[in-house]
Image 1 (cartoon, rainbow, N blue to C red):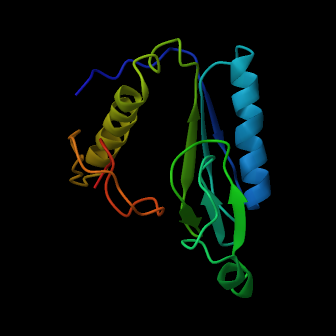
Image 2: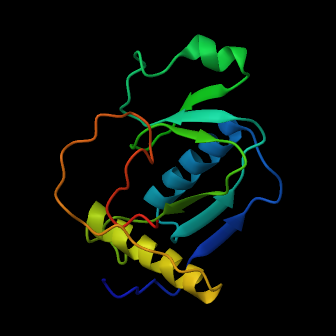
Length: 158
């Protein structure tokens, strides 16, 4: 694994209470805009006050997403400003890590950044006596599912 070398100055934002999906996405988008104007890297930890299906920026609403089914179950559907596949949020703790792609530790590219994030979580889980495993980077066939976590991505904690 790459050596985790975070910049000495960064922000941690931990939301005390669960928030709506629209607030969570707006907060992440605001932080992204601030980062583009030179803000230091930011780790935001947050929860959801309602079941929410968040779709990646480039996902299309098609037969994989039944909006009527979601509406009947009071599941909010919204779109993230980031990529990735669909995630159903409920009681989970979510994080967003926002930093400049031209500066360490994020300048190595997406896969290298995933590895750095995984290394941080790996160390944390070891500290609390869990025995995590990391999905190593490997070539694989494209994943057909629109659902995130239907197959582990490179450097995902298992």
